[in-house]
Structure formats: structure tokens, C-alpha cells
Length: 260
Image (cartoon, rainbow, N blue to C red; front, side):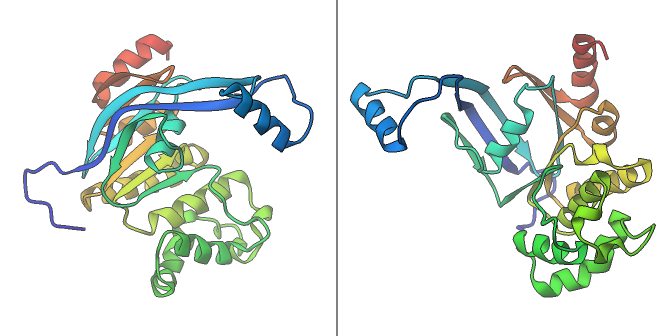
């Protein structure tokens, strides 16, 4: 990562009038083969009947900079996770553009690890998937295990992931992701599953990533986690960016709106 001159604000993510549209099959089910369905679409010159459009993100624009920790808040279904997936390059915008500096990494509570493999093997595979070398993984292996806390009540790292509680799995996912310095790290509710001790470690690690000139996005329903971790908040409602500003200012308005 290039050195950042003091006082400069270097953009890491630029979202420019981003619209995300899902296409969902309706209740009607067509008969016949996929080839026949495609033929019907071509003949009509349009989309297959029964396909419903869901406009999940509507014209969102913002610029994120190195060293920022940005919270994403909003009601359920407001488009927070969808926006993160678009930034990560997993969902193509229907219109608008997303520009990123470096490789964004998305960590969610449902991030895929292999249930039939041990925690040990998943640490190796997760590290490789993030672009770490085997030597780097070896160097940071014990740090990952200790950070996750999965071995505090036994040698769980040698057991298959399917034997872990959901909280243990989430802690291990976060610990693997946090072992690497990221240009842009996006965390979707991963802190909600840990105990107070783990959340404190996680929040400190996020602050370290910011100091190392990374950018962190955090989706959370815990306003306390947002307050403790983020200096800026994006508030989404029904796919639209309702407010973008300093954490306390945005949360104050959101709490009035949501009655929290």
C-alpha cells in the first residue's frame, strides 16, 4: 500500500448513483424446459412473465477514504448487505458505478467455511482465499486461534467446524479475516455473535486496521458497536441513502426514527 501524505484524504471506495435490482421468480411456475422458456422470452422480446423486480438499492452515492470506519445502519431489508456485496464486486449494479482502490474483502456471519473440515484446515484455506501465503498463515496461526477464543474450553481447533456453536464459527471467521491487513474490509454483523470480551478484541482490531490506512465498513443492528467502532455512518432506508455524516449525529436521527 502506498504511503499516505499527512493531511491527505485518499479515496478507497466511490459509489456513484448505484442502483441494485434483484429479479425474483414469482408464484407462477412455467411448464417445460429451460430452452422452451428462453424461446418464449425471445419471442416476446422481454422478460419471462412471473419475474418480479426488487429495487434493493436506489441511487446511492458516497466516497470512503483510507483510515475511516463507516457504519451502515437501517431497518431490516433497507439494502445494507446488498450494498456491501456490490462494493465487494459480488453484485453488478443495474446502473451507476462502484470504484475501489485495492481488493475489498467481505466478511459476513454466513461466510463460507467447510463444515466437515477442522478449524485448523479452515484457517489454512481461509488464509489462502484471502491471498496470504502458507508461510504467513503459519506465522499467524496461533494468533488466529488465540484471538478467536475457540480453544478456551478444549482443543476445538482440531475438531470439524460442524461441532462448533454458531458463535464459535463466527468468531473464527472474523479472526481469520482480521489476521490480514485489508485495503477495504466489510463486516456484516460478525460482531453481534461474540461475547463482550470478543467484541472488545474485535473493535480494537478494527481500530488497528484504520490506523494502518485501511477502510472498514460495519453493518450492525447494535448502535453500541457502531458508536464504539465507527467515526462515520451511512443510514439506508428502502434502498435510499437517507443520511451520511458523523456517527453521533446520524445515530441520533436514526434513533428518533426507529424509536430505539
